[in-house]
Image (cartoon, rainbow, N blue to C red):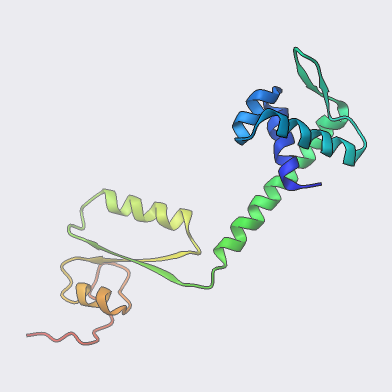
Length: 157
């Protein structure tokens, strides 16, 4: 049994139409039909009832649909988890020209929410004399809009 076959089967079960399911999967209808038939042969049970007017799931097809959705969601979750373990610590540095600018905090909150393990976000006011130098040198910045904490190579004049 292949994951591709399970995906095709779930799509067919959702569409209940070979043509629409094939279009959703970006394959030709005959290829979809062949993969479903192979899956049925491997499982030794019919999964769909076919006629010229309709496609219906059998009892075995209904049961497999629930299990296939679980399997595919686990596979998707495992793939997402593997992608987060890249071993790199990405840092996003953002300079805000005006601390009262309303959009940037919303954008940064969304980045933190959607990529909690991939990005470390530090907010620094653009007016900080060492902000630009810090971002060029790769030093660390403070988190609350205060002055840069790296101070490497920066001198007051």
